[in-house]
Amino acid sequence: MSKVLGASVSTYFVSVFLMLSTFSKAANINDMTGKWYSETTEDKLFDGTIRKDLAVSRADGTKTITARYYAGNQCVAERIATFRWGVDNNVYWTECKTLRKYGAALACPARLEYELISVTPNEFQYKSKKSGITYTNRRVSDDFDLPCDAAAAEANEAALHAVWSYVRAHPFYPAELTERSAEVRATVTLSLDGDGKLADAKAASGSSWTKTDQEILDWLKRLQPFPRVPANLTSPFKFSAEFVFVPPTVLSEVKIKWIIDANTSASEAGLRDLVASHLQRQPRSYSNDMNSRHGTRRAIVTLLINPDGKLLNVEMTKGSGSPRVDQETLVWLNAAQPYPKVPTNFAAPLKLVAEIGFGPPSKGIWSDEKIKRSINNVCKGC
Image (tube, rainbow, N blue to C red; front, side, top):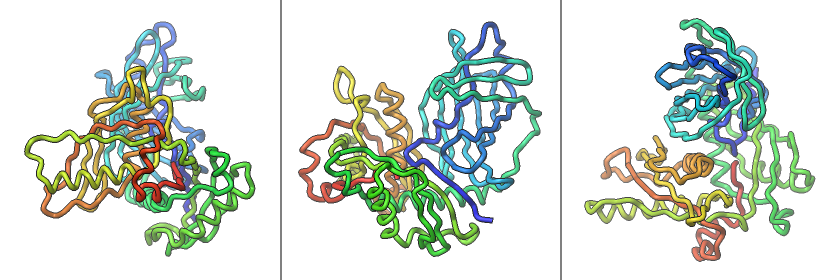
């Protein structure tokens, strides 16, 4: 049986943890502590699967959610996140603190709010203020668990991550849309054999431009071979993805300032320059949220980079003032992997602290011909 996965690569996973909500009237907070089970097919991270959640809510205001995705009876992926939670003026809120995915713990500072429909000692219903979707949680015993082969689920995610990293390294923008300067979305279903060859590719949900859809499929065919599919996964490896193509005319200008001390060596400064150049070549579309009345929003982030360029961890040390911009910045930093390799004479992992801001499109971004060649045609969110 083939594994059928899917991903919306422009959507950060924390958005699928739509847990809990608002208290109606005098609901007791103790009624919402304990272990809870829920499931949904509304999750767009993996198509054709059911997401089943186990949430442990504690009276000290902490929460852990384990989300597992099933194709039939087979667990194909797992996410684990930690939260803070509470109730203010009958509004139930959660703030994501860490997310474990691809075997690494990542920061995810997102606040979500919900309207609570009903609360009983054994069940509560709630509705997301953001999406309007209604969910039901049922209390389960402390020893209740969901079967999952964690190693196999991690192999699935690692295979998907390898494909996304490869696709991002080969930017593309449909020629038909160049004059329109339009953002376009298209969902494509792909099948890869064990050698990374494209066995099949279909436009599951097209861009509304037939010629553009064919351009996208032709581009994917030219990318062959993709990363090899691990031997422990069933071939062909099937998945679907939403591609979001952003015209270069709306790319933001990436502004990076390293926070260093007097002991920073010349070699480390040179490595920081390489990392900065690498990030400035990673496309990110501009939005008005990136500015406030005081100017460009800036956030301070801490990066831990392995010698092979893998991002071990990223933390939002100081937010920009916009939770949405902060969340998207973390997604962008994770998508930029692999980073430049760290020389063996550096302590591992390499720790870097930077202030990052995103300015509006500027002619200055085209001054470096290497950058121009890298992002003249852009696929963002692949």
